[in-house]
Image (tube, rainbow, N blue to C red; front, top):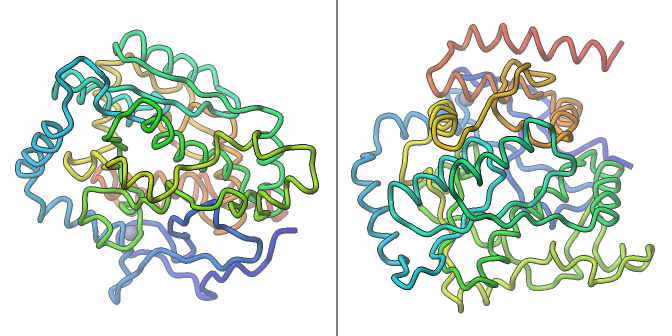
Length: 360
Ligand SMILES: [Zn+2]
């Protein structure tokens, strides 16, 4: 049963720069999420501006991107292997962001990346095509990891029933596959694309190039939670065993440290602009936008590889009043591609239609 009160502010306010409201939760460690937990929300300042917009100002005005690129080169030289082995691991789906990251790291910066993909629940046709093209046309090595579908669908079901969050097991798997594979292949550097903090976690989290390791590690596998239920409980009430959970179990925090595995995100070093990533990926890895707009929004090129994406955003609309067009429009405003008024018009067009379906 989904808890009705998840601690969101009673008074809804909207950011004065974009269209995000104060109902948007910030990123949490998904496998610690229990039924009834209150959601932390993104930060708003005294001027009613969200922290994602605040960070965007810093990104556009205060960061010296040439200096940041020099830092990147220094970091890469530190991890570069001379014996031909893989020296950097890049988790991704072959969407525009991971296609960009892996391609520049190999062909511009001369690294030897291994890309790793946690498979979608169900590939869309365009997602399958882009994934194949990323590897074949983009010229990259990849491991596609597909978890046991019987367990994955069970976890997805309980996450939907208990938290209205069917995407949760995917988010957990997708995060953990990076450090897990890095350990197996003795790769010390993992590079993600953007930092989740860019979308509204505390601004200070964007001041460092590394990701928070607590999102990628756990010291007790039995006390991880899926759909708000601990692994220990799930095992007791089902025929699954701890062995079935192997792909979801992250390394121990200490092991990551002892092995010297570092997790960085490229958005710290290179100015991240989703539309530019799209152009780059189209040219270099054969990435294509969909031939029709994504359900619930106006865009055609982001988050298009898994059939469950649309459903995920539908649940965020129900829980937070924030649907896919709102997320997309807010981002386009920040990137200077549309004005706030245009964003409001898009939200009205695509979200209100969905709300009518929901409430009438
Ligand atoms: Zn904003």
